[in-house]
Image 1 (cartoon, rainbow, N blue to C red):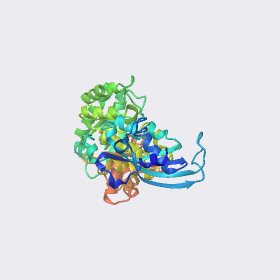
Image 2: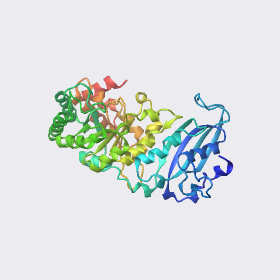
Image 3: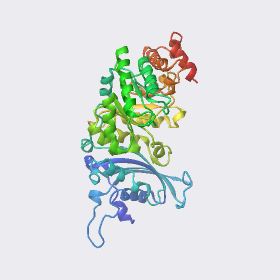
Image 4: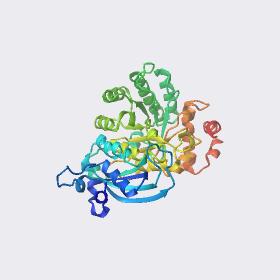
Length: 430
């Protein structure tokens, strides 16, 4: 690529119609001229060959991704050793591209193929690259449906206002037949959970078939609701082959599920969007497979990007790795994902962020303070179902902890008068 070629992949942001482009933020390390590397990044994900041989034409003005911001810093070498790319004239680069969304349209598979496909991760002399963020113009967002219920809809279904929504992952997660599985789910809902959920690993299993499980948990939710006077939901995991998603949704809902769980990346975001068009209950995302893209700071895809895309596909709530060492996710990245659920995104509804990982009544105050508000879901597993006094007490301990937080009373002080909370702090507080 010569100097004239490079210039064709640069533009001033103010000279572009913002409604025609998505903006993409990348961090990368390259060998050689950072401007040339950035031009290659723009080229490879859009019009890599912009004219025919012997023809006077140039497709770049309309179809090329364009560099609108670039900052480069020299480095001594790559962050990690890289085979096949000499570590000479190395730079760390932050770059923003404006990519014309007319190249792929409102189609998630085509969008993903463009902005984080071959044209991003096989760019010459860029061995290390991380896709940091994506921003959509209103014109493109208008073609997507987004969540059907969103946070307000979930709160309305549960009549749960001005507080977190309390989920609980029924444990043991794999191995229990449907009847004992449903019984401990009932105990937890009667004790204070809003939503008792399948683990993301529990499918339509022969020892615990979805049809039987949904019927028993649906009845358990109804009984717990009648006894407590508060709505309860059973969240059924319907993750499966794509052609089974709609039949399993219909089966689970008909038997009593009030919401369905889908492992977003294993089934694919396009499959989720298909299900969103059909579903009659909230869709809740879980995060298997995402860490393999998102864990490393110098390669892959920031989880914030995938959170935005899950919201765009139609998830009403997004379960994500939460705070603390268990999930090995930097606090700033968890907060980035929470903001991706909550911040304005055209007319797309907000999704409930559900940061989780080894939570219990002992961690609720910490999560609340880090989220900075009540619009989040709290999703213990062992913190409810491994409580020394049983699942009902585990769920009760969450509500007792929240009552203390809401009243401005130290959780430990409230525990003195509530044995369930005291037991939770003793069991999980370390």
